Image (cartoon, rainbow, N blue to C red; front, side, top):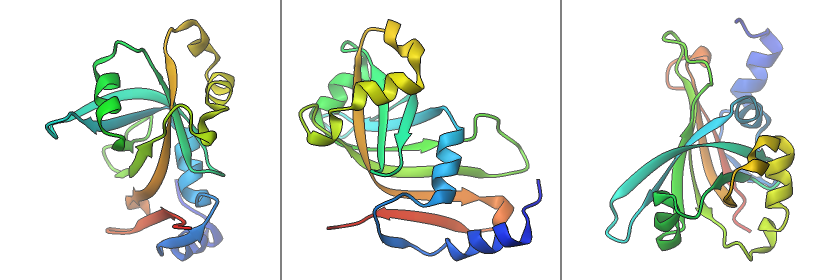
Length: 165
């Protein structure tokens, strides 16, 4: 799909690192909103990485990502030991001709953190079938996101960083 000249210009403008933003960059948000599955990486107490895939919901105005998991999942115990997480989101439909996706880093918020109070409601509103699955909704505060899109040219990145206030 070819981008309109104005949209391409807007994208190139947004390739700079976007500091002091409280709302996630629209290009990144649009991509994340269109996808459904993320890969999340956590580590155990020895620093050994472990990755898992999950459905997610994004809240762009606060840079929060929600996912649901059962209490007895292997990664749930890993997440309790180290709150630092990283991950990727790829297009639901992959193309061998286009490299597109995001890499992110963030931190798992404690279930008593004020930003997690609406997590269940937000997650289940977007993914109502998750109501029948036992488990808990987790909240990740995204701190940095790097988006790659080869349609914009080789080596072009779109980066969002959380405001450090």
